[in-house]
Every structure is written in structure tokens, then in C-alpha cells.
Length: 245
Image 1 (cartoon, rainbow, N blue to C red):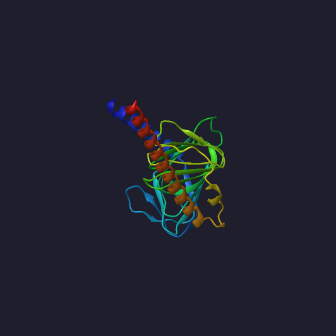
Image 2 (image 1 turned 180 degrees about the vertical axis):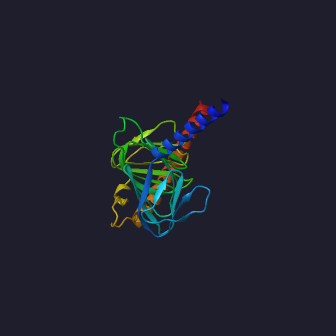
Image 3 (image 1 turned 60 degrees about the vertical axis):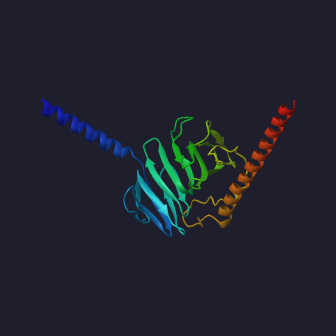
């Protein structure tokens, strides 16, 4: 009796595992340029090949001259140079982790319930929730994360923020020194992004993109210093007035 129960449990578990595996999405590599490595987490990465298929849990990494274009029925992903992406692909939801570098993505999830997030993107300083849109995410490792939306809406939350902000068409946001959300607005970055997602086009990001990213960060840090100095001066004046009175 015990043996029969064990066999039934084993068969049920195997069936469940196979069903889960069949539901997991995969994504194809349709274009590569320069150094592009792929493989499983914890194992040595190997050079990517065009038309190969990537599955959940795998990593894709590009070098200084590297670029990769990935595609399935739900999304198209252009992985920029000097970037790392970890794939977590499921039946109804997907998570992309970008600890370094960036990507341009077009996500369209047919049949997704209204208001439901079908794609999540995580960096070291922020999390994004996507329902269907075209956007760019860039992670400056532990420094900050940047989101620019070409079309649609993307939810953005810095790891240091309590609230999520919705970033709409042509808007940009990023995290600050404390990993908190910056108010979405037009930083001029959208015009610097190469949004092309078709094989055969010039898919690389222009140097103006990377220089503008650095310019944005330096400018915001300067704004933070001015705000802090003004705040400190105001507090000092309040304290002096309190003492004198």
C-alpha cells in the first residue's frame, strides 16, 4: 500500500514538473554583435549564437562592443553593451533582472487582465512593473537606475521609496543618492535613446546617450547639494532666531 502511494505521488510530481516546464516561456536570440555570452547561473558563460533559445534562469552578458536582440511572442529585448541580464520567464509573468547596464524593451502581453503586471524588471536600486509598453531601463550598478518611456506607462519604485510612481509616454525618472524616486519629467533623454528593435538596423546606442546619462546624474547631484545647503541655511537661521528670542 505504501509503495503504491509512493508511486502515485512520484507520478503526480513528475506530471506537475513537466506541466510547469511546458508553461515556462523561452526567448530566441535573433541578432548578436560583438562579445555576447550566455549560460546558466553559477556556470561558465559561453559565446552566444544566433537563433539559439534561452530559457528561465539563464544569464546574458555583453562586452564593450557587444549587443544582443532577443524576441518571443510577448517581448523584444535589445541588450546594450556592457550589460548583464538574468531571465526569469513564466506562463503569465516574467522578471528580468538587470544588475548592470541597460536594455530597450517592447512588451505586449495579449489577454492580460486589466491592471495586472505581466513583466517586472529589477535593478540594484529599483523595481519596475510593466503592462504593455516600449521603454528603456539603465542600471548604473549601485549608483542609480534610470527609466525612460517611449510609449505607455511603467510603474517605478526606488528601493528607498515607499510609493510607486507611474511614468508615462516621453517621461523619464531615476533614483537619487538615497535610492528614492525622482519626479518623472522630460530630461531630454528620450531623444538620445536608439529605440530601433529591428534586425538589420543600426541598433547600438549613440555616444550621446551615455554622455547624457552621466550629465543627468551629475546635474541632479548638484541640485541635491543646492537643496541641502539651502535647507541647512534655513535651519540655522531658524535656530538663531529661536535663541535670540
